[in-house]
Image 1: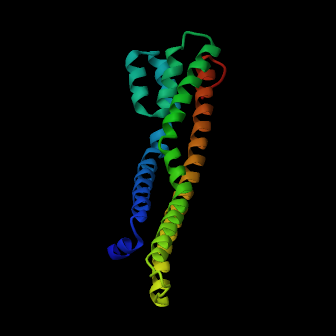
Image 2 (image 1 turned 90 degrees about the horizontal axis):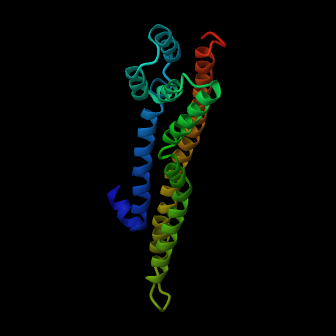
Length: 203
């Protein structure tokens, strides 16, 4: 494998760096975007029950803020529990935008890797082809078998680039859809919280 990498030339190292970065981002996002971490089930009823029994305390807000992204949204709303419904919703929306930004972390980088990897592979192939044809003798004497082998090695860059791009794009699309779904879920639960504490509905 290492001999293949050496034969493909220095441009392939760019693709390898991109692939390692993509794997790291995918692993981190898989752990960070779990439903149990972002929007844990049963949090809304627990928050409403605690509010009804003890009211809003500083300790409650601190626990909520450190509990989960959904807890951060709830905490922002409960800080303004004595304000009007509109003020409470505005504070929740502001917190929601910050949480949404955090959930999108590294996804732009992953999308860039998915888009750029085939171009890096093409760049490596072009560099390899230039080196192959530039190494031919001025008289035009060349070994066809050696030339074919050199071209096949140069094409490994394109193959590796596509190999990195496909899973990167799949996971990028998956994470984007998952984040959008989680943001909608947090918005719905936050709205339920506002309407519940203002006596407009039951959980």
